[in-house]
Image (cartoon, rainbow, N blue to C red; front, side):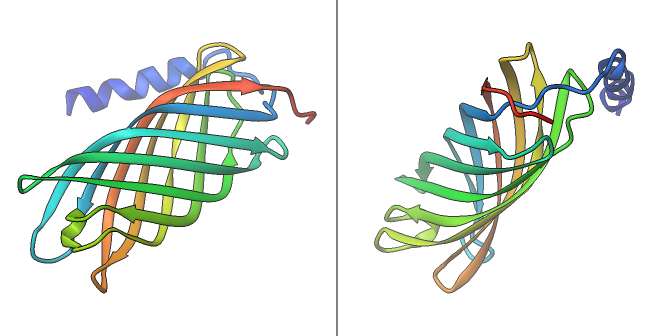
Length: 179
C-alpha cells in the first residue's frame, strides 16, 4: 500500500512542465512479453515468457493503426509449449504530456498454439482478440519505454480462454505528423 501511495507524487512530478508533444508518423516497438494462459476449466493456468514486436502508424495526434506479433514459450506439465499471436487494430493515444503518452487499443487476429498448449492434441490457428492499453515513457523525442497490459481472448477445445498478457520494451519514433 505504501508503494501505491508514492505513485501519486511521481505521476504529478511527471506532469510538471508538461506540454503537447509532436506526433511521430511511425513507432516501432520490441521487447519482453509475458502470458498468463488460462484454460477456464480443468488444467488451470500457466505462465509463458517471450518477446513482442509492433509497428504503429499514427494517422493523426490521437488515432493510429497497430500490428503486433507476440511469441511465447515455456514448460507445462513437463511438455515444452509455444504460442504466437498476430493482431491488428486501432490505437487511441493521449498526447497532452511531453514525458508520457497513455494509449488504449483493441486488436483482432489469430493465435497459434503448439501441441500441448492448453491441452490441444495438434497445433492449431484460432481467432484472437486483445484489448488493453499502456503508457510510453518518453526518454527523448526519438526513444521511449513502453509498458503495456492486455486481456487476450482465445478459443481452443470449444472453450473460451481469458488470458492476461503483459509486455515492456523500447519504442523508436520515426518521422513527424503535422497536427
